[in-house]
Image (cartoon, rainbow, N blue to C red; front, top):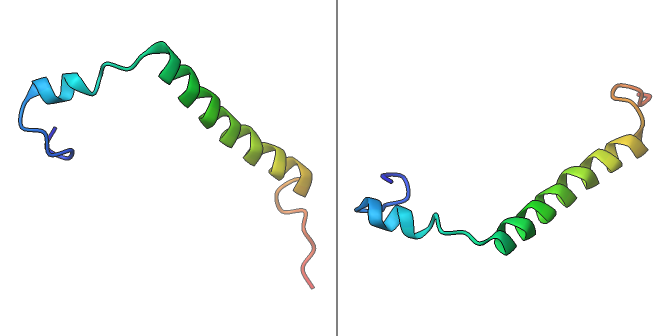
Length: 53
């Protein structure tokens, strides 16, 4: 609460009311970010396999 600047637990509770639709949207977005990074890493090859000249 201190980090967010909330003065009461009621304010914190207000922001904890997240609907299933919002949760699904956030999960899809985060999953997309994670899998895009993993896909990009796979396309680059194993770590440390790049040649230096």
